[in-house]
Amino acid sequence: MNLLEQIKENAKGQKQTIVLPEGYEERTIKAADAVIEQGIADIILIGNKAELENKAKEFGLKNICKAQIVDPENNPRQQEFIDKLVELRKNKGMTPEEAAKLLKNPLYLGAMIVKVGMAQGEVAGADNATGDVLRPAFQIVKTKPGVSCVSGAFVMIMKDKTYGDNGIMVFADCAVLPVPSAQELAQIAVETGKTAKAIAKIQDPKVVILSFSTKGSAKHEVVDKVIEATKLAKEMAPDMKIDGELQADAALVPSVAKKKAPESSIAGSANVLVFPSLETGNICYKLVQRLAGAEAYGPILQGMAAPINDLSRGCSVEDVINVIAITCNQAIALKQ
Figure 1 (spheres, rainbow, N blue to C red):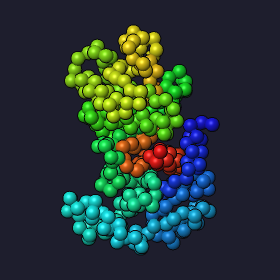
Figure 2 (cartoon, rainbow, N blue to C red; figure 1 turned 90 degrees about the vertical axis):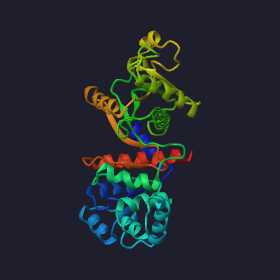
Figure 3 (spheres, rainbow, N blue to C red; figure 1 turned 90 degrees about the horizontal axis):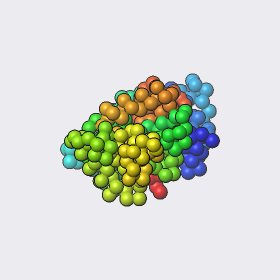
Figure 4 (tube, rainbow, N blue to C red; figure 1 turned 180 degrees about the vertical axis):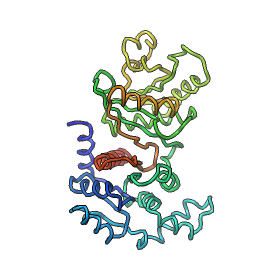
């Protein structure tokens, strides 16, 4: 059973409800139909019931009738949602009139459906820009207690099984935060270790915060940030295996690790790589994907109080199904 099959089976065993705000979008509604048929998740679609039924008929879909439908124009919980949004955004001067208008937007309504517990996660972005997906998520769902930043991880599955956990690794941040502080970098390291366990099924995450220096081989303020982040991450998660600052070869290659970082217990065997900036993370995941022929799954947004995941607008139906299954696994992990 490959990793994606494991993720889907885990989702089936502990079924979650996922809201899909882009109910009219062709790939999304086709994915919803397949997810329901395969028993991966229960689905909430946002849209007009008659229009969604017509879409289902147009595409020959047989399971959309089993989805829960929430119509922004006729929502029986609208007043409750308005009151909740006003409460959440009162410091920003939110009025009931503004809240009512925002909640007609499916992305705001989807985030509120997650906030009130109707759904355990949300998947969107096939038809909307990343910023439009994340803005209501940040305003309504917000981050986990004790976490101030959101980051994006990629599960990398490599043809060469020498590295990582039988060829599986997790890279972050590759999608969200351009220049994290030491505190934010530490949070990213801890959250990525959790993602490795929950999504990549790496039972023993070995997290390395990377640098161009290994254990003091170079001096620079960006190296100092990695050293501080490593210290903070170890304090945040004393039971997690975390190390830094290490160069990539010292993190991955046992023979290099023996020379450069002989005192490290995880150098040479890292399966989670945390990059010091978004620039380095994004460049590296794309290089590994293209030059090494690795499969890259993500970005998996981490740090949210409930999982909200953003799709590429170029996604396939299968991509949407996979992200729904990943979102279910994140929701399951948050309950544990």
